[in-house]
Length: 114
Image (tube, rainbow, N blue to C red; front, side, top):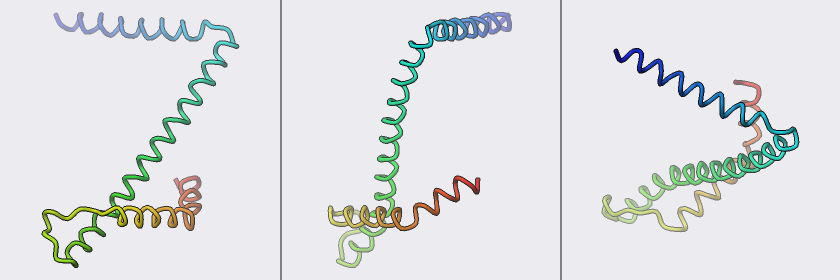
């Protein structure tokens, strides 16, 4: 029945993965070193983009409530409140200051405490 088909599909996937792995590992040490170097820089690049996106999300999380309070204070319609550029800049500066003042505590806690 379908059990045999699933086993054949699974063994085909495993065989394909092992063939790919054998192909990757069959290169010379110089080729492997070049590949590791390329992917090392790609990982650094993607990690940089990820941290930038994470920081932008932190700024947005801080700016939303701040813009809501500011809009309500000035009597804006709650459905049409939006964060102005100065609010985003102010919240970005706040995140930067917070990280520069106490970011090392976070890194220490993650490095040792987890």
